Image 1 (cartoon, one colour):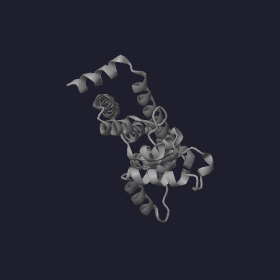
Image 2 (image 1 turned 135 degrees about the vertical axis):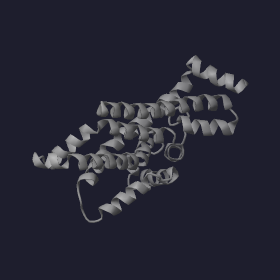
Image 3 (image 1 turned 120 degrees about the vertical axis):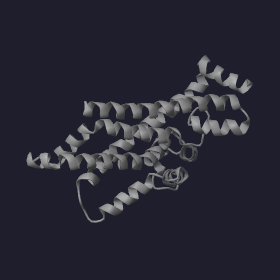
Image 4 (image 1 turned 90 degrees about the horizontal axis):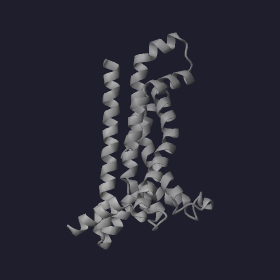
Length: 231
């Protein structure tokens, strides 16, 4: 009970250190999703609209990467950004930038796979119309992306949910440095091991609330889109 009361005190009192962790977590996850979408949407569109040798293998690999172990992604990024790695000269290991890169790589397959399926389904519906209108490849991509924008937002929310709940990747490349790279998930792991359950419970409550809000938004957007189509 004292730990629960302490958690509520941290949440309601606006504790600066507490909400600095929350802000950094949101910044890292939102930035990672935005960066991943810049690659995921075009990749998904290309896979949906083109046919080439090995396409099926690429799709299978992409779908498989949706379940990438976070610690493996973190290790790969660590090796790239370490001093002896090919990108070590950037000097961004154990910084929020490294955490954004790692999370972007983690969620990119999720967004790309969902986008590919959504665009491909829509392409089957619009193929004859766009072909008859002699719309070029770029125009097709733009038209389909715009028409399925609600479903693509759902893909982004799914990516954000994965990124926000992730701990292994950011722990490896961020180092869980207090006041600099400590996120909600890494702080929960650390504070639980230290016995500071009030902080862990408070951050856990915020994290669960965020995930519930994200899933509610995804459900609401899809329901609104279906009502608009049927209505």
